[in-house]
Length: 186
Figure 1 (cartoon, rainbow, N blue to C red):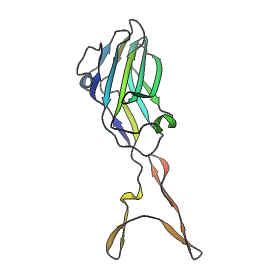
Figure 2 (figure 1 turned 135 degrees about the vertical axis):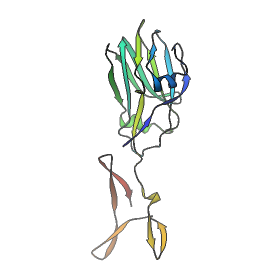
Figure 3 (figure 1 turned 30 degrees about the horizontal axis):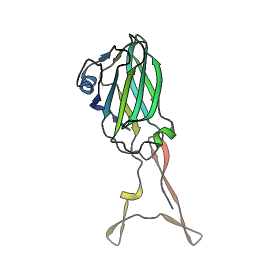
Figure 4 (figure 1 turned 90 degrees about the vertical axis):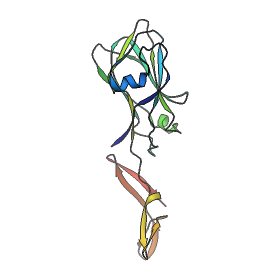
């Protein structure tokens, strides 16, 4: 599974017709047809997944000319889609962050999406409930793992196995979203 961050607030909606814009995106299609018009939408909070892969912005859009989609943390651009030439039919566009870009996210509660019309007389229509950021579920860790010792539940602080009579530290992995992730290493 993945965590999905849909728009949940308007930060700025210059020259977009519908307000509150984030609410229109949830319930109907929205349109902007002013050159240079932009909108910044706050995204719902998600938890830091503990990995830097699998961060993708999705939008189902159509109409004419070029638009740009950016993922922001506050006012800092994390990812810029570049100019996207929209078609007359609805298409799902996806923009996957590099691991380096995802690593720059320090606050998953302050993420935003900026949509900009970059062409004169360009028109964009975004389909109902189709603009969002997808990030992986939180990678499990041992911070919440407990074992029962002499009838008392005790947090796990290290994992070791006995090999040839000696206790040695081990690395523990778990399968998360189809990928093996290290969840503990001594």
